[in-house]
Structures are given as structure tokens and as C-alpha cells.
Length: 329
Image (cartoon, rainbow, N blue to C red; front, side, top):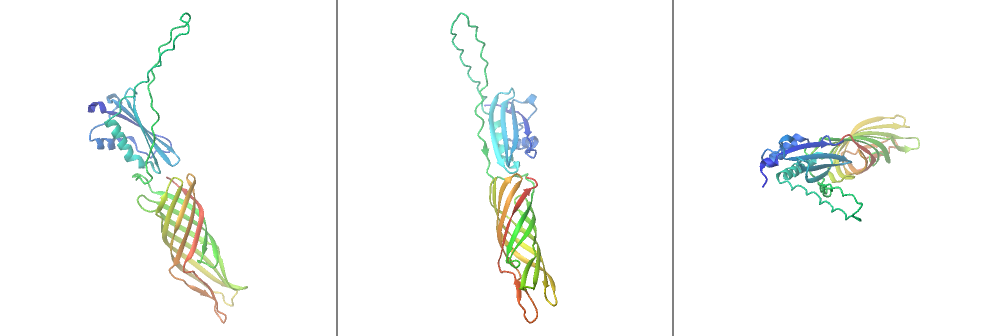
């Protein structure tokens, strides 16, 4: 059995480009020693083993490669862990893997047997063969262990996404009305993403006849929660529910006395959101939903030929399509 002194380890952690937020050497040392309940890591002059952890970021994935060797460089084993999203999802698995490797390190890899020298064709003029050089045997590269997407990333910061979208609504204003939306999405840890959106619609007209009617203008703010239903490296599906608060302006035209009216409007919203990663950090986003107004005001013309010009539908339909950019991941 190996003694504790033989298990003292020199640790090196290397963080490649894009992996600067990955686990650093000191927290990794503390995590391993806490698991093993003893001193493990020392300076190279006191160590019998060497562990090199290399983090590499490629797209949405981060790989942690662990290389264990004797202090003289003889290979003793490798591991490879891969996680998507924030690389702190690797923290627990990496700490456990390093602890297992240094607690019961594999035997040194055996040098490959030198090939026997070829028999001389003619003993007269053949020079003596040089002694073969022993090469250390290196096995095939380790098969990466991919961690599930739902593994917690304890050091993941809040993420912020921003986006813009073209909007179309039916039942909110007269006819199908286009508009534009700008939004900010806060993605905290262990809580559904929070959507803050502002939207404005093109002026919409409700006609009484060819020369008179009313023009409607609507600007709204939205607050919604969008918990994820499915999430992968390229595709994400979410369900959003929230409330919209709007500022509705109505102005008559073509009457003997044109009136103006301004009021707040409120509605409840629910719908589905889908995202497709196009090129990090840009994603395409689409939303389809319905809303229920909390009050359905009626707008009508006055006078002898009074006519109802517009009343919001009891259920309105909404659609959005646009682009979303992750400010940091």
C-alpha cells in the first residue's frame, strides 16, 4: 500500500482563453483536501506526484483535462470532463476526479518493449545496429465524460441578454397591428429568467366612414417570468407568463369636434418562446402568445349617428420574431 508521503502532489492549473472563470488552483486544493481529510498538495521539491489541470473553452463547452504523472514525468493516468454553459458546473466533478486519482493513483505506464533489431542481410558489410531507444507507452486519449446540462454551476453569475423583435398583434388595436419591441432578459441562478420589454405599435385607425374615425397609438411595458422547458447547446424552449401595462392614446378625426383620450391599459400574458443559437453569442428568437385585457373599454363616435369604433378583443394574439444577444455567458 502506498504511504501518505508517497501521495503528496504538486498541482498546476492552466486556464486557456475563454476559461478564465474556471476553478483556480487554491480552491481546487482546498476541495480535494477536504474530501480526503488530509494534506495532499505541496511544493514540487516535496512531491511524489504531479497533477496538471488544463481548461479549454470551445464554443459553449469547456473541457477540464487532468493529467497525473510521477514527479519524474512518468504518466500515471488522465481524465477529461466536459460541461456546457458556465464552467463552474465542472467544480464538483473535477474535485472528485482529482481526489480519486491522487488517493489511489494508477501504476506508472509501462514503457513499450523495444522492437528486436532486424537480422543483417549479409554479415560482411553491415554496420552494427544502434541500440533502440525505449519509448514510453502512452495509451489512447481519454474518452471525455460529458456532464448533464442540469448540473449546477455554483459560481455562475447572472446573465444578461438583450434583444429586438418585430411584433404583430391582433385584438389589441383595430386590425392586425405591427410594432417593434426591445427587451432585456435577466437570467439569475436558481430562478426563472426575468423579461423586461418595451414595445410600441404603428398607429392604427378605426373608421366610422371614409372621412372620419379614430387613430389609436399604444406603447407598453411588460414584466414576465420565462422558465425553461427544454435547453440544449443550440435550442431553448420556454414558457412565459406575466403582465403588460400600456399607455393608450386615442384621437378622433373628421368630426365637428374631435376629442382626445389617454388611459392606462392592463393585460395578462402567457405564451411560448423558442430560441435557436445562430452564432455565439447571437440567437434567433420567436414568441407566440395570447393576452387577456383586464378591462375592455369601448370607443365610439358621438352624435346622431353614434357608432362603436373599437373594443379590445377578450383574447388577443401576439407574435414576435427577432434576434437576441448574450452580453456575457
